[in-house]
Amino acid sequence: MQPVPDIVTAYADRHTTPDDALLSELAQHTASTHPHAHMLSGHVQGQLLSQMSRMVSPLRILEIGTFTGYSALCLAKGLGAEGQLHTIEIREEDAATARKFFDRSEQGNRMYVHIGDACHVIEALKETWDLVFIDADKVNYTRYYEMVLPRTRPGGWIIADNVLFHGQVLQDPVKGRHAIAIDAFNRYVRLDPRVEHVMLTVRDGLMLIRKKNEIA
Ligand SMILES: C[S@@+](CC[C@H](N)C(=O)[O-])C[C@H]1O[C@@H](n2cnc3c(N)ncnc32)[C@H](O)[C@@H]1O
Image (cartoon, rainbow, N blue to C red):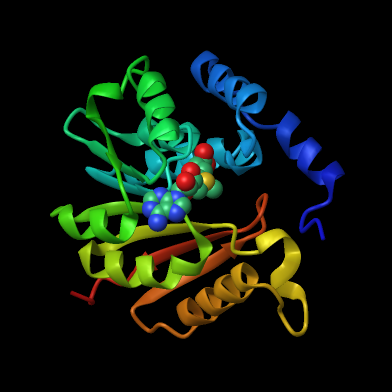
């Protein structure tokens, strides 16, 4: 099932600021060389991530699931001079592609690629996050959320991608281990008194989560 009709997506695409030359080149490079190119966030979602990042003006961004680096480049647009983006990718080849493109970007010297399993790397990064983007293996979303929430500053943000999981979360009952995991994540966040959240029906669904100020 397509959560958002193609005609709506095409209209939104036409009425969104175009990607810059580097993002366009990376999207084209990924589309022409990578067998899983569909994983890349894409134009409208990418511009949304850039705008959110600019609104937050984060000092520290964490991305879980780099792929070829498209969403990281988008998120990095909101970094100030002292800001840093840390992104985690388990596949060395994709991390290498991302690094090559980061090195050509204005924020490249403040972008750090960590190669490895996010479950281990998150633990090792001793930072307080202003903005986190969860976009790796779906079965671990709740785990990643629980790992990063204590290290997100009060009033900070977590964005989770694919929360509609191609519309499969709408099935009754939900089938397939990825859709089941995402549905469980959505319910977990809904019942979590530590946060406020909104589900956006952009692309494959984004959950925008804000850690409440009074939570340590
Ligand atoms: C949907 S893609 C990320 C897309 C990227 N954020 C973008 O929008 O361009 C998910 C990525 O997470 C990586 N990944 C999967 N499991 C992981 C894990 N346990 N630790 C780190 N990365 C992982 C995959 O190799 C893949 O590149």
